[in-house]
Image (cartoon, rainbow, N blue to C red; front, side):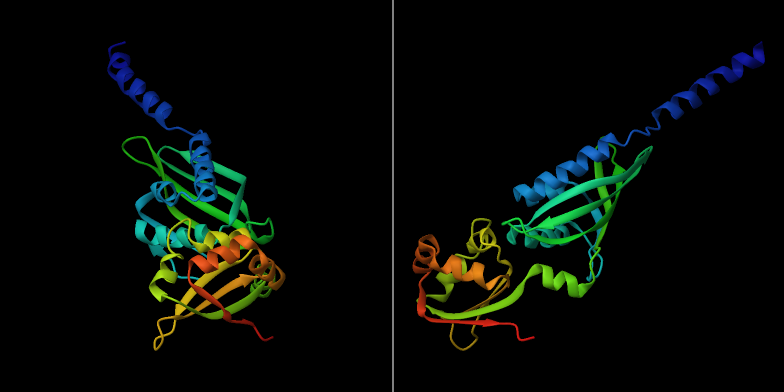
Length: 243
């Protein structure tokens, strides 16, 4: 009896510790759903907050990177392109303060065209405040590189003169910049260029469909935006990638 009384507290402590080792994955599933919402709402701050300070990103066709700055840079570009990301769940497991989530993704342009699909795996850790954060995030496409390129569309390059190069560049900065207008017309991955010898000679490179680009340029709102940005439309030159 005395021996039982000695070991009883130890047995109770072990039972309590076992009970505290959560195996319910719903918390990380909810947090992963927050990731999808933040991405599609264009809230890069909310996205970054879902990752630990030393989180590691392992995107396709690029080196791994760490830190919140790297995460912000990675997803800001996707947000600027106006993509919509849908995640589907395959498996999620939790043991104590560690968990993982495996699933698939589909990426679409602003006009609903599918750009990519693939799979992902997130590793999660619960901090001292009971909050879950992603520590490792890896994803890759189901499509060969050639298929990805054709799904995304044609590479288009545009050059034109403007009245003031700095004024034109300012219109391309921020969440509501001209990238949003392009994304709404299915034109993504936009890069801006400025001639080193003539600061008022500008360039654009983006991915999309030529018909969408021409339709946008015929739209009165786009013409008003070009006029507001000081674009000299009579100097516009359009190039497509030669195959």
